Image (cartoon, rainbow, N blue to C red):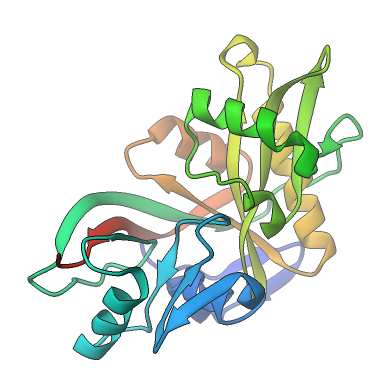
Length: 240
């Protein structure tokens, strides 16, 4: 069974994990407030940035009502990490078990070959994501944080970046490699380089993975991450 852990990252021990239990909420109410839209207590990212939404811890009927007004009838919310049960008249479209992983001694290091990606790279980034499916990536997702990549002959063949930024932590996400270049260690290099940038800001790297993707989880464990807790990713639809 996976339980909560204390971790040391870069020699700094952190024991207050409260932001991690509802990271989208902590991000939208904090460092990513500039991307937030909301009604009442419900928050979400601007749809061009990220599909995630968040409610307060232990949401009440009023919180769910605010969420329904925020997106409108018959529309969906992507709620990450928390396992809150929506009202009976909502529908579940996705119910995906996952894991939250945290830096437990990642040998982070910069990578001179990794390039900083910009808005000009978004078309190639979107193409790579569409072919490898690491998770949601919208036309303004790149604004959420640093994105790094590798090119060969002018073509983007691997990328990864920062998604949720919450007090003390930043999530590594969208790590993917062109199928023709897998097995070259590019994803690992990107994770280590991104972790170094996060550490340099005095923050702790985190990431999330599909609980059934044992190969990815094993790789992240080999890179120095450990599972902090089991989580849930769900997409729910408001009443029509």
